[in-house]
Amino acid sequence: MHLENDQDLIPAFRAGPRDRFSVGLSGHWMAADRVLLDLGWDVSSDRHPDGHRITGPGDIELGAMVRLPIAEAARTAARRAGGLGPSFGLGWRVKLPNAADEGELGSDETDLCVLAAAAADLGPLRVWAGGGLAILGDPTMLAAQDDVGFVQAGIGWDAPGQLDQGWLPRADLDLGLALPSASNPLRSELGGRLAWGRRWSVGLDGAVGLSAASPTVRMGLSLEHRFLADFPGDGTSDRR
Image 1 (tube, one colour):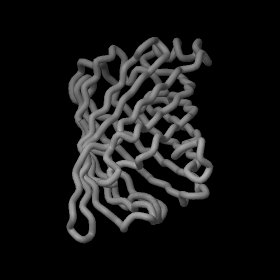
Image 2 (image 1 turned 135 degrees about the vertical axis):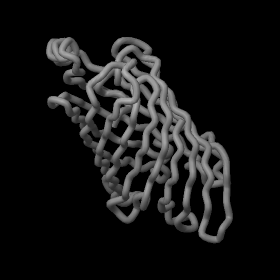
Image 3 (image 1 turned 60 degrees about the vertical axis):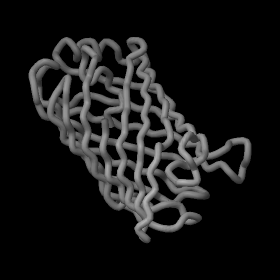
Image 4 (image 1 turned 90 degrees about the horizontal axis):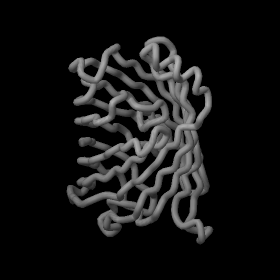
């Protein structure tokens, strides 16, 4: 479960700034040794400057990441030593337009994202980077489509321990950048997350916008339970 308060700017054809409070649910499933599937959905409540509030379900997001059979010897040696080793992956993510557009809680479009990612251990730290292309809107209608390139990089730290060793801390810091396109300006965010726990965990996360079109402030609270034997399972998972 994920609770998030998001103050952001909305597209120019809509009214103006709004405050958003969201309650989200996401899940991840290792369908095979190299295949990670995920699903995300939320319910949001928007408060507009005039005090009007709109509440309803948001868009559903589906995704998959496949770990490539690269550097497997180094990965195996690192896992024997208690680490994760290098990982390389390819994936996709699709957002379905199931939210009611009249409430402006969704985009009323199906958006597709394709991406590549890599991660590696640096002693007690883990670094990751990725990038890709988001195809927004209807690709069969040129005027309704926008292609946005994006990159993201981050660094994380986990206190040494196993899944059953209680409330051990971990921390992440990441930087995301969406490149300017024909319909969207440059967007960038600096985010961080602090969490406690292994099998069960609670976390605090937040981000600040580094460009005018980015959400001004993003804050969240999460509660997680991991059913997997490994943590975090694979270096190209949804851990940013």
